[in-house]
Length: 381
Image (cartoon, rainbow, N blue to C red; front, side):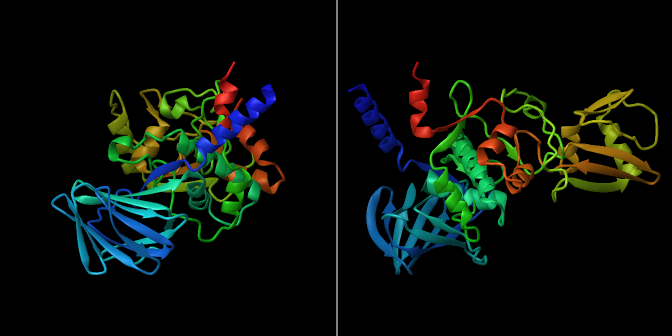
């Protein structure tokens, strides 16, 4: 009897989680004041401030614009005014495209629902979509094409975990996550990599949790340059599962090394602007530590390498500095902040035959992979 009751509870909880949507701010940061929404498949109900006004079918378009804080939608010559929000509500799995006025079609195809509202004199577009339909788009946008399916499974799980753990990141702006690098890159449904959806389906609902059965901050980056870093070295707050570790898998991958040269005078002036106190010494500063360092250190100053990376727009904070007379050469390793999972390392591990579970446990210490719908069960003592 107990087993039957438990099975019923698990089934009901699964239903409760099915179809959970996420609100993604798309074209985030773009100052669009007019867009054309073209329905590609299925049929959409057009809602103006909550009221259903008409339907739009495949092949039809709607022009939406904003002026003085008010929205206008024009469908088949008929004009609809909105003071709050315009919604394109799909009937089932339907797809649409968006093209901004005066710009070429970008080729992005989105599914499910589209919400539009005015903010700061521009249009804010929000793709309201089921998490499991959102994840494949992130996989392709973040990971690219032509990789092993085990890598795509990894990206599916960390992308799902990240999104579900950041549902309030842009709450004040009217959506959950954005479609840029601030959150996760998302360009609509995948167009070129069919394995993205296969990997999502193969790992459906699986997320990463810590020992407290809480969703982890599933940080990832392109290439760690051979050594990841502790979370607190980048964001000040430690995470028990994001700890520094050597990584030999990414060292021969495309983004493992970089170089940047600049005039010695420019480098010296930059260092002088950061030094405290400023000394009267002249010349370029050589910096060749024998391991990854968090600071550029001299007898008169200590500068965080992450600050230098941000100021000079470097690929990583993992670099050495070589004085070449009139020029200074920065020779760096890796691409990104270096915390958590190294994508190119994970790609290489997948090629070598490691499973998605092996890869996730390699980069995140002491974590667990569980179905999201069962988190409540694992939390029960």
